[in-house]
Image (cartoon, rainbow over all chains, first blue to last red):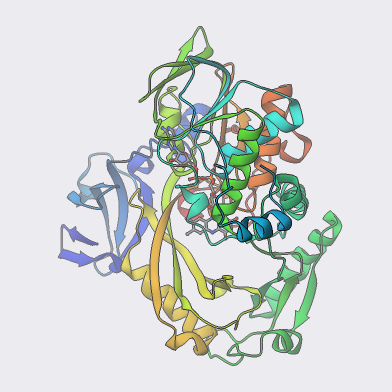
Amino acid sequence: MRIPCPCCGDRDRREYTYYGAADFLDRPAEDAGLEAWDNYLHLRDNPAGVTRDLWYHDPCQSWVEVERNTVTHEVLSTRFVSAKAGASA
Amino acid sequence: MTYSGFRVFTQGLTGNKGWTKAWRQPDPKTEYDIVIIGGGGHGLSTAYYLAKNHGLKNIAVLEKGYLGGGNVGRNTTIVRANYFLQGNSEFYSHSLKLWEGLESELNYNVMHSQRGLINLFHSDGQRDAFARRGNAMLAQGDDAELLDREGVRKILPYLDYDQARFPIYGGLYHRRGGSARHDAVAWGFARGADRRGVDLIQNCEVTGIDVANGKVTGVQTTRGPIRAKKVAMVAAGRSSQVAAMAGMRLPIESHILQAFVTEGLKPVIDHVISFGMGHFYISQSDKGGLVFGGDLDFYASYAARGNLPMVEHVMEAGMTLMPMIGRAKVLRSWGGIMDMSPDGSPIIDKTHIDGLFVNCGWNYGGFKAVPASGWCLAHLMATGEPHPVAAKFRLDRFRTGRNIMDEEGTGSQHNLH
Ligand SMILES: Cc1cc2nc3c(=O)[nH]c(=O)nc-3n(C[C@H](O)[C@H](O)[C@H](O)COP(=O)(O)OP(=O)(O)OC[C@H]3O[C@@H](n4cnc5c(N)ncnc54)[C@H](O)[C@@H]3O)c2cc1C
């Protein structure tokens, strides 16, 4: 699998470290309550199909949000996490 | 038909013409007392013990493909009871005891072979951790022996003891650990359940779960709607999709785990060997193939095949540990979809919907759990109370933070298991 890095172009999967579902970008407020934190940390849609998740591109040290298909491994789009407004990962 | 050595002998003399089908192929009825979604090891054993231990009739197992076509037929069949944490250790201990009587229980040869499992360690710190694990196993009533380097060398002379990266310091020997024939376990439970009147319905995909006033009322399937008083979701890697039909989000991420098998060789590896530091484990099947595997591909996936970087990693680890296997030819590799939970431990519980139960989160370790998982889910469904050995497998433990069972001690978060 190759993942296009917005900075470096198509790169081998081995240059990336996987973090998990893009749910991790929506960190709730500290006092948001149990349900919100459970949702954020544990509960997942876990789709068989298109998903968005977070990968760290080690060589250029950037967090990349990848839109890809979990059944075919096709990568649909990528962007820097920092390009997303309010992102904190 | 009861199986026996005598029957094999007489059938052999009469051209093997007298064997009957191992189970029926019934059409689904319009209503059952209990419907189980998923005809893998866990679904089949649940149906079996519902009928056997609780005398229940009118049960159906709905399987979207064929029986045993999921992970139960794709795994590397290690059966062991070497867990450390309370909650896990009594459960797997119970499971191993069920394995030890399984063949006579099912009248089926599941080829359970207690050839001994050796977990290698490579540092003083790891030795301490394994001594502690061994003590926990002994305290649970199971067996464990701590071997030093020479102790391991006596049993496994062919390992490379002085490799630069992970020199071998010793191993934890679990004599009652071993392996079994995966398909036979599914077939044995299927036949046992069928003989007790359970309808096993194949090519029947559940496409919806019907809920009215907070209570489950049945399921929609590709073979028509089926009403049911109780429904269990036992879909392993597909658990999230099935639970979504009931409007639930589970603490599960699906990942791929690969396995490999070589051409058949003369007996060379008599035990199950696990090389945790290198992410590698191996045993030899009764046909002679070396069966081995490693770690997850480490990103969410439903492709039932693996990625090449992990193939390379597993081969490298195997060569590091036992260079002698380098000339064996790999015949096949494949992947299975694992239902990974945040703490690496399973879930057997009720849900917020009355009559709807969930069994999932088996990670890479659910084959050894097949007998006890069915035993405990059947107990929960029949009596309404969790079985004592599975009482900690709660769905809400992540929300409450109570009784998290993180065997690896890395933290209870999806990307850490
Ligand atoms: C490569 C590999 C190696 C492994 N090694 C080991 C090991 O050495 N030791 C060990 O203990 N464990 C091991 N495991 C883990 C073990 O195989 C699984 O945890 C266990 O088999 C999962 O439970 P199951 O048998 O019920 O799953 P499955 O056999 O996957 O059963 C689930 C069933 O549900 C069906 N289903 C899904 N959705 C629907 C639907 N909508 N309607 C109807 N049916 C549906 C599926 O078709 C499937 O047949 C390994 C797994 C893999 C992939």
